[in-house]
Length: 417
Image (tube, rainbow, N blue to C red; front, side, top):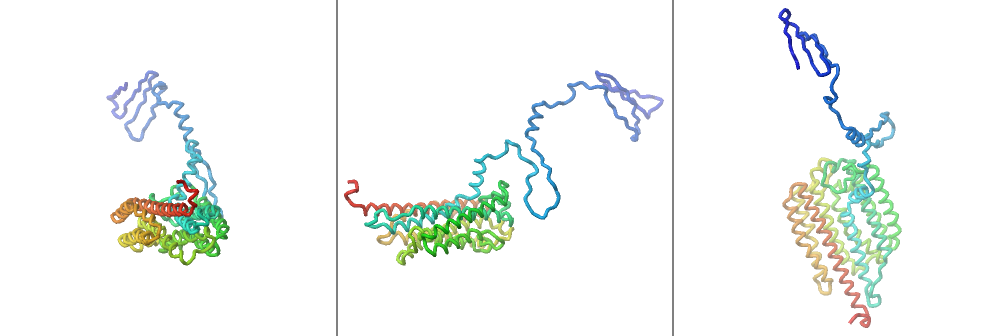
């Protein structure tokens, strides 16, 4: 309760009395702005003071991150300091989460694009060894597995090195649609990504030198080109992907180079002249589709690549002519398949690759109608699907044709009636 008493003899001063259950105190207050008094109470009831439960304070204390004190003195070396705020224990990632981060960072779909030409070249080499004397052909599992490991290591290293140099040059920094992004998303330190990528390239190069021994000198040449292409595709300021050579490099590496390289490792040497043209036609199929994937990826990133001063074929041509080039790439595989499968005595079963036409229509319509990065990203995923389905159907057709040839070369007395 508050009561004011006005003194008739002196209007400049009032008295404020604060009454509480614990006691009273009267304090004069002058109206003048220069005079001030602090009013305090003798005691306050406990229920009037706001309190926080002890359990809540303990929870907040447990969730509070630890703060580390770091020195700010200058040094001659440049390094990435540890974070000032340490994550609480419940936010520490386990082994499964780290493996998931690395698995997404190596971009398994792109690794698959490198594996498919190896399967194609190996299968073409094995098919040519089928005969009445060798009904099951000659297949060297060690050479095949060695080639597969080399290609996986080189492709993984290329993806990680690409992640690092994109970060250094400010490419795809704000692009949430791009694959990988171990560094851009803050999962892994940049130097760790680069070191793992270089180790993969080194292991791929060393193992490739061993595997290439069975294929001859041309395989060594192909291996050197593949190793240099894996590194310089995105490394340094004059990377192949930044000087309008990304699509050309992809066409050569993912087509003739990997297909002929795998063929020669399995066959033990270069192909004969009679089969050279046939193998070349087969190698053009993954080359065209993989180049289409790379090209539509660059179409999606035209804006961010231009800001980072990365010159790609898509940014040079513009969206309209880039669409024309994309149509040529994806449609170009079907006349080649027709030329392989229609002639008399040819493996007609390869024509089942035309089952990918519905996927082709979806990818084409997406690229022709899309003009936003998100829409082009969906079109790129459809192109990846088209490339994978096409290659798998092609390999399956060749494998079934080869197995049918195996049955035809087997003696009739061991065949089931």
